Image (cartoon, rainbow, N blue to C red; front, side, top):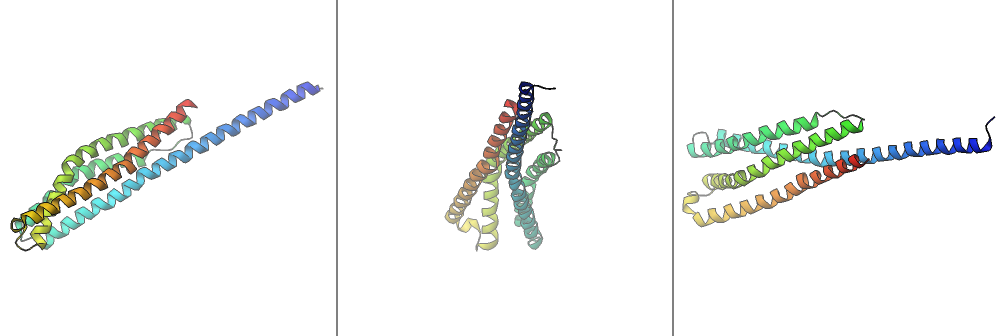
Amino acid sequence: METFDELQKSWNENKARESAALNKGVVVEVIAAQIRKERNKIFRYFWASYFWQFLIYASLGHLMVRYWGEGQTVILCAAGILMYLPFTTVFIKKYNRMAWQKSNSSAQNVLASLQMQHSLLTSFFRFKKKFDWIGIPITCLLLTAIIFKLWVPNGWAAHVAGAIISYVLILSAFLIATFTENRRSFKVPLEGLRLVMSEMQEE
């Protein structure tokens, strides 16, 4: 028959195992919640950007059809569509790979998945920043040219000062929106992913 000391030792060992299992379960839940939070931030950008790109293609396509007989308008709209196609291609490719990553309860597999997600998001962010340097000024120029061509009498040539002011205002709005978007949708989520990976590696 077990002595009191043996029973107490056995009891303490069982409690220690239960406490360790509970602590591990809590850690797993916390990490899982952080992962969901960071993924939600990332994919909120995906849907917002997807809608924005759809709106660009639909608007420019509509203007091309409506003003088909006006060569300059058609060329401006076609240039806008062609400029955004590489961005949309890379955008869909990167986000599709992140969306189709299979979740796994294994800590090693979860960490590998997070590292892949971080790598894909970093890669797309680098591409986006390069695209922004070229795409934003050109997009704003095309928008200004289309607005003055279609809705301002005699076009931009008759209103050079107005066209320049309009271009600067549109460019400023785009730059502010892009700066805010990059911070909210890339810098903060990437920092969050790094934090989660660091916590997992410490466990």
